[in-house]
Amino acid sequence: MPNHSANALWNGSLQDGKGNIKLSSGSFEGQYSFSSRFEEGTGTNPEELIAAAHAGCISMQISATLGRKGFTPTSVDTTAKVTMRRVDDVPTITAIELTTVAEVPDIDDATFQEIAADAKANCIISRALAGVEDITMTATLK
Image (cartoon, rainbow, N blue to C red; front, side, top):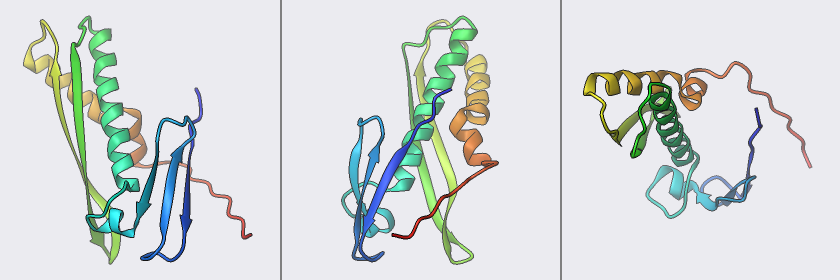
């Protein structure tokens, strides 16, 4: 399986600095700042990118499971809303609300609900957010 990467460069202090996030594929590059992360400022933030990754993963997982069960979706549209709160005085992701609307010919609601619940539990991003076994870091001081 392929490895994927992204880069984030931050310049300056936490509240006055700014940064840039870039995906290795080149498909996205965007600015972020204290204001875009913890207030309502312009730009993206890591939590928004987590929401995008989770929404994309859920939609693909649902589509894959539908296909394995003989259904061909017309569309699977997922929105992920990440909630961040202070826990022990540290900003923490405390909830992710997933909302999926799918158009799937010839499927009953019970079957679709089962497939959606399976996607929530088993998509790659859901599993990663449940607890990554190994986070490594190499830190170099320049």
